[in-house]
Length: 228
Image 1 (spheres, rainbow, N blue to C red):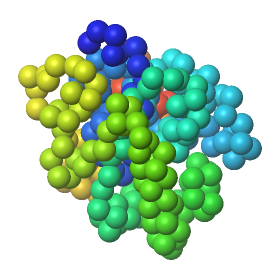
Image 2: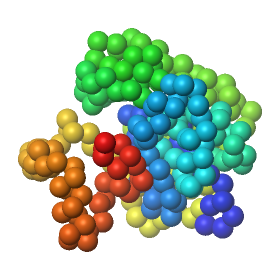
Image 3: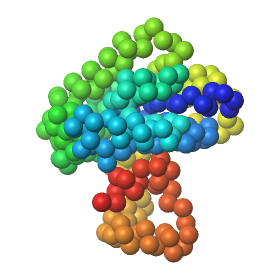
Image 4: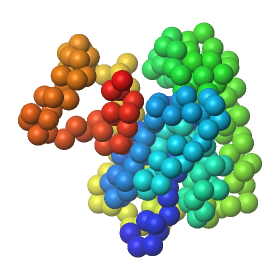
């Protein structure tokens, strides 16, 4: 990948705009990727960015929140980074967000939106989504070498991503990984049910016993987000 790999790649598309797909794509290109990190919520609510920026030093690529909302801070901390905004039809986005997050009161979402629950706050969430995209387009309007706009639902993929990063097109198909729980097949729902009723501590011991790698930690965030 040459010197381009030294530049951090920061996916600044809002969650539910193809962030998992972008993470998978960057893994295929050889980047060490970090995903959503719910464990930074308390620090961010106190406007303390020390922990999150220190953690960012460990990784080469970023996807999901809080990273997407910290593009200015990451830009200042890591000059020469590449920024990728994934967009999605807003009606599809809010529908997906409400289905995925429901009425859970998510602490990180209090920082992002001012309210932790998506269900019942659709206009608030839509306004934040629109504002995020508009502010990014304004911020990067004169920086074409640093910024890429992608619409995965319209077929953007390796054809735009690889030239932007300065890397060869891989021989594998561009990954499509936007399969939220509400889109699971019956078999996947059956597996997820039994996975959910087994305590996390027991699941971790089982994985350690069989010495299997937990694929759900491919974005280096499973334990920080799930093990409480």
